[in-house]
Every structure is written in structure tokens, then in C-alpha cells.
Image (tube, rainbow, N blue to C red):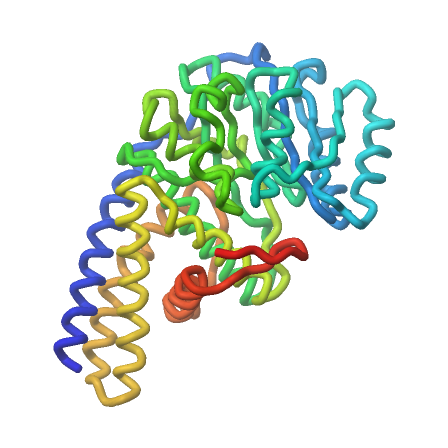
Length: 376
């Protein structure tokens, strides 16, 4: 058991080296300070939805509060076979907000990915060259488009990733989700800082329509059920890295809802993890493997301790991993302000167990999402 414990420690040390580099990357992405206030950019906001009656009200209310000229943005809603009153809500809002150009279309199954289908339906009819994708369960800040516009005008990027965080709430599960999501968002920022971007979130993702077409859209990954955001970004990072930017600003942080129960959370994370096997980015592949092996190492140490391994070895390796994790999340939280309090008490123990279970299921299992089943 000691030999296996040493191997586990080696995996954790390798993991710590990756996290240390990402910590340095967090400090290399500066917060954006706008120097222009004249709106110039037109935006086509693409919003796929399926049975979001419960959440659409918050999104529509936040759209009404955007401090951007209404003639410089449009909304494209894509209904993915909703069976609730989502369409009715959107039509009612559209009648009350006639100054905002709003298009509502039905999705068409061209690929196994509903979101990719929605985006491919939207691109040809988008009135503006800049497309921003978000989700129907999100809440947008009033300064969202104003800040995007300033960032675009002050830079030459043609694809922009931006921050997302979970809404605040109480309970162990919600706190754990904020911790998990904070880690993903921090990895996103850190990877941009070390010039190895590979991750973004489609709830706050912008690109020029012409750039999407230049990249060939989703060609090459259209058969993968998820990944409408990361695969497109990885294409850009490989072919045109100079056109890729991260908008680090509190003024554009989009808020989304955590999952309501552990089953939904598990399915969501399996859906996200399933993309990793199709990454065509060396750094992303290496990091995914290192994260999995380090968490598997921690699980192995927990199990071996129960069967007689000296508990001090497990504690030593646990603390070795805990320190850079805490620094990384603390530094990421300075910007994202997720205020997760679960990390010191529960997250550090539960996270390896959860991550390993998700990873293994993503390799061998199926997942359900929005009432549909998908093969990994």
C-alpha cells in the first residue's frame, strides 16, 4: 500500500504544478476598464430554450433593463420542442417590448446537439455580425452589452469569452455547485492568462458571425451532443489565437441557476465531462487527465486509509493538494465573488469522490438532459 500511496502523491504533485501555473495565469488577465461610451456594435443575442417557463421571466426582465440602444441589438429565441408555456411568455414579452427586434423560431435537428442546431439556425438570419449566446435560465447585467461594445472597440478580438457564476443561495448542494463552478471559471481565466485557452461557457460567449463561418462552424464536432462553446473556442485558439480574448469585468458577469438536486447536477457534469474525450487541444487533454488522476489518487488514499494505511500519509497528501486549491479558488473568487463557504469543510473531501464518479460515468454511461437521453 505504501508504494501505491507514493504513486498517488506523485500524481498530486503533478496536479499542484498545473494549478500553480494557472494561479499565475489568473493574475495575468487584467480587469477591463472601458475608455469609450459611444455604442457602436450591433449584437444578435441567441437564446436556445426548452421548457424554461419557470426561468424565462428573470431573463426577459434583465433584457428589458439593458442600458444599450434598442436598435443595436436583436433577440433570436430558438424553441427546442418546448411543451410548457415558454413560447407564450416570449410572445407576451415581445408584444410589450416592440422596440426590441425579437425573432422566435423552432429548432431543427441537423446534429445530435440541440444547442449547435439552434446556433446554426440563428447564424444565417442574424442581422448583426456580432453574435452573443446565452441561456434561458440566466440573468444579464444591465451593463452587459455596453461593456462588450467597449471591449470590442478597444481591441481587435473576434471571439470573446466572458464570466458566468451561479446565483447565491443556501444549502450544501448549492454551495458545492458554486465551488465547482468557481473552479471551472477560474481555470478559464487562468488558461487565458498563460495563453493556453481551451474553455468557455456558452451562457456568455460572443463571436463575429464572419469568424464563425471562417472557422467552419461546428464542422468536425457536430456529432457530439454538447460543446457548442468549447470546441468552437478550441478551433479559434488553434488557428487564430490572436483573435481570441477574455473579457474580465464584473459588468458582464452573467448569473445562472444551480441545479435543484444531486441527480440533475450529476447529469449536467457528465454532459460537460463527456466533451473532454473529444478535445483536440493538448493542454486541455493533459489537464483533464491530471485532474482525474489526482482526484482518483485522493479517493484511493481515502480507501487505503480505511484498510490500514497510516492516516498521516493521507492527511499529508490531502493538505498538499488543499493548499494550492485554496489559493487558486480564493484568487478566482476575488473577481467572481461567488462567496462559496463550503470549500474548507466539505468540498475538499467530497469533490474528489464526485469528480471520479462523473469521469467514470462519462466514459461508460449515458446521461439525460431536458427530458432527453444522450449517449456519451
